[in-house]
Image (cartoon, rainbow, N blue to C red; front, side):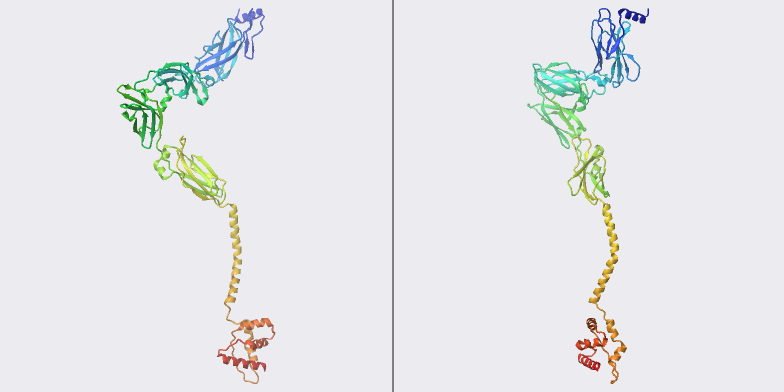
Length: 569
């Protein structure tokens, strides 16, 4: 009989129906006197590189039931047997031996129950990414004791060839909780490096501690390690130096410390800070500080350029005829180049009526120092209207700036300074000299300008005409013409004069007259309006002739009297 035929025969004899899967619960056919078996709540647990598959069972009375699981990379449609999870009678299995090349790929799992040749349908687990499901396991810790300190050597979670934390081994941060074994109430927590010391302890005391690892950037916190306990040693005859200080100026660094006894020599060492982040011992990486070996004072001076720019740790050790002390507490310090940043040079140019262009350049001193070759610079530009206190600030790496939406014919000012990019101490230059510039005229100003020019052109002829009239008036009043008016000139024409002066009874003679006050005659002519010319002349000459000959006054008066007598005749 084949396996399939036997299965259907058994089902018929037992009166069972089918294998059902409802909401993640599977049911095998019940044998005589056996209850239904229901696996449920399938879960995946990953700690470091350890993979576990767990599930629950509603009854443990059914025998001969095993479980098997398969896996595949999502999207490959290539199911493989999950190692460690084949034909297991337990409700959990360890599949850490699965070969995964990439812990960031999604994986699918499925599991089923088996009893002899009978199997349930597959229960498929929601696809998951191993790295996102992984939890940080407890680190391994090794301890060494001193009289007032405990040396910690911490191994990162996982193994050395771990694929889960391969890119994060140097990113772990470790937290230590330490307490005296006699009193757990005096706990203290410190953040430490993989190779570090816990200071300020007491000699010959038992201390206990536990350590956990964290990945702060991913907000992941691991499990605590087991509790480790160790006794500090008895007090050493030669104490360690204390209160380590280091000061740096332009050329030298001064290292100082406190020590209670004389007749002691000291030496100091330095270590690059990045070694602290690397797991393992680094005692061979500590280097002797120049001019700080076998010194008999509690200070030493060494040149600043003995250290390249960076972060360092220093430590000091004391020695005398009785022995050598433990190393002092390690002191962290920074060495940075003495950088002088000169203020930039600014040029400001008006482009249009509503915009200004700012150019920022390096000063001559800065170009000689080549500071921008050592450090990338950014520029802070402050821009404002000359009559206002409102400022506009721009912080950019570029050196060309354009400010828009400005007012026409308005004065704007600008100043700038240079800063070292990504510098935690905000090193910067002083501000440059303030430069101001006026924007160009706007369209309204141009219109008024054109209108003014046109008005001036059209008004020019009128102005010229008015000036000519004024000049004629001035000439007429202040510079009159020497020629008699036309009315007088006509009156004294040749023929009328002859008719007027000659009589029939007397010999005709010529008489000449010089008329100097012609204007009086003209004025009288206008006021009296006498029709006849000779009547006007008689009236005027009878009152005050105002006419003089080229002879003397006496002869002139006689001639006038004779002229009047003849005229009356």
